[in-house]
Length: 607
Image 1: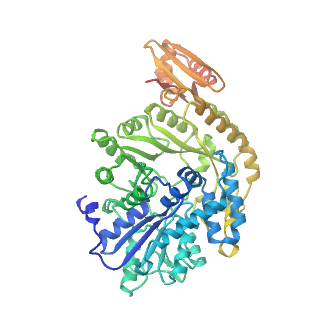
Image 2: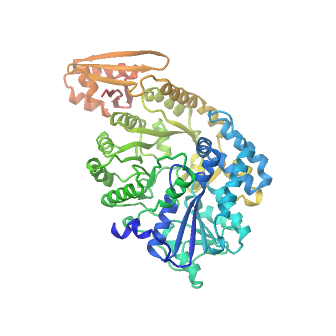
Image 3: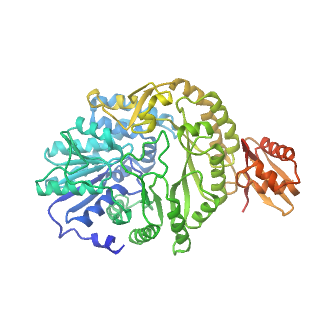
């Protein structure tokens, strides 16, 4: 770690005159620094003598419009793109305003902010940022794009080109991969170069190309004239070779911008790149990565400790699509005995065991995002999740048992969903009531996902420009985008899924109204020879259930999913019919869940 240390990157006074400005735009979460620009900065500083500065424009905008307003817009997605569409394409302003209002009117968070005032505030922030830099001294400007950062980046790049037509500008990131990136370069003159794929190596090669003024355009660099064919930039393997992200520019901006309102940021950290599963039919999150790679646990431990000390931070958020299980075991085992009260957010698969979750909780994992996506096993099969409704309910229970907050989505309007799958979902939602409620997420067709590549396999008859892009972009600029519209059974799906949306809203409201937020809605206390189960119910009095003797033993045996055959073997004195009767009775009371021949006790042990 010594060669990667942040201490080597402090002073830029002795560096070359080649100067790179890396820009992170709205609508990134304001309380997190950009790991993209921080990682690129560290890599360039470690591998060259170039000067590299970072800018987090979203901090100034969050301060100007208010952090609550900023967060609301950032969560919406399309509302933020609409604001910058009005700046980039003034002729689209009225249509963009209508989209903005439609997106925020339905979020249930109060009156919609004034669109015109917000556009003026954002323009003022952009003016101040642009005026604060001597662009004559800049050699290259880079924009890193994730979701909902396209129009902001295009607007700022366009402003800079109006100021200095010869200023080189490069785009990169997850929103610029493959045909989407090529389409952007072909349609927008403000983009000179685009990095297709992993950014560190190609960006360094592009800097060398521009600095030296000769040679062949590097590999993975795209221009309007075509793709570079020069020196190859292979993906970085192992990831341990990467320097530690440098978040000091973010903290400097934060302290200047929010001097009167300090907050504690969550630092993004990266354990792996890509996805070890790679079978989800709707997913397009890994377009820029080739394969799956991860850091060693010891490297990740050292990185977290260095970042914690350097930035006086205690909360970290893993950016991984899914965390590497074996390395995570070693990592959290070490963090559990390390000094300091460090906490983490991360994404896990639904088949993570209670034993692992308990270990991770001891090591600081407090909140997880889990790819639940559905409570219908047949629908999960078409989604390519490799899980069942039983797996998902067991994961929800295990998180509650381990004291880990679970966040997750249930995808609605999934193409070709059948009425039987809707009925299965509605029924299974009754069993999920005691656990942390999911959010609904409307299906979208993402570029590069298996469903995008093979649409007819999923009942999609045509791929179109997404209607929101038609609202935000003049016709000439509508090329291949990260999200597509489509023809299929969309209206039928919207109608079919309405009862699911209503039931999830009621589920969320039940948890908001609970008086005992610390306890679990469905919990048990063990009396050695008997068991008392406490069950809260929506809009009804709480219930107490008492299980004695072998009934208690059966229930506790099903703490994790068990097959009926296993139960019959474990309790040979009971007939299969008696076991089935017991299970069915408790399923009717929503104390157990059964799927085919597997059963699960749902109550969580009270502390």
